Length: 101
Image (cartoon, rainbow, N blue to C red; front, side, top):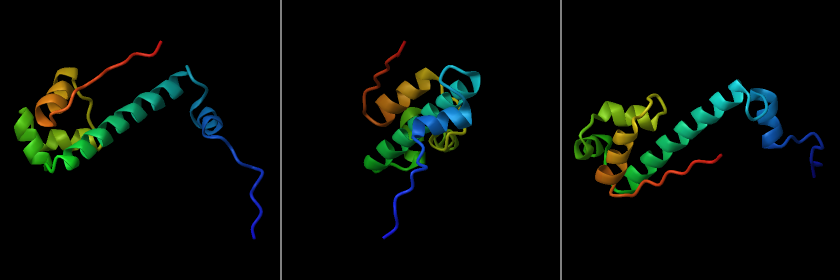
């Protein structure tokens, strides 16, 4: 049986090493990109749960399939009003926003 490695690094330590400590410009950029990625994944999962194609979701909320695809694939910034319309009208869900200080 193989012995476990003692050279394990926590995810937090890995982020500090790769992107700098929390609060630095590089780390903040990483964190923002990660949040955008998570949002795209959530929208994609909800869309699939509802049995909608990207085209159907786009038609329901008045946007384009290309725009939905770009959001789901983290290639586009999204306006709050558009996000609310996608979540509420397109997916029939409620959007909750919180701010951590």
